[in-house]
Image (cartoon, rainbow, N blue to C red):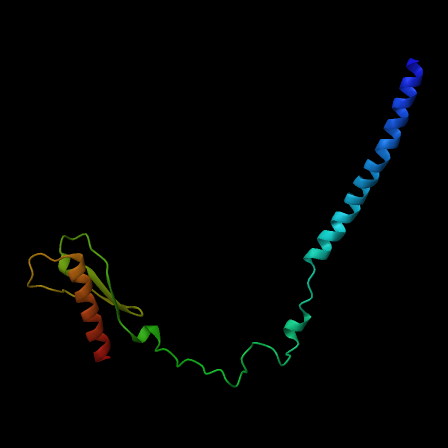
Length: 130
């Protein structure tokens, strides 16, 4: 009786593992194929120059006017010194040239905001004079 029960049990095991093995084999083979199919895209029409292209015609593109060279313009920035004189906390430069103007000399106390505003004014004057 025990032998018959074990025989039936082993038959059930072999019969029930075959579909599982087939399913595992199918998944192992199908997954790489599905992934390769999902990652492939044909972008050959991107370079075809077809009439429905969204790229502008090169003749229609108007170039921006050239900006003046950076070295031709003065730039004044608030860069504080450590000499306890807040009147020279602005550094102006044009290419390799640098200068520290004395701004707001008649004020006994100068804030950073006031120095930044004075630096912008001084920069405008330098660039207006050429």
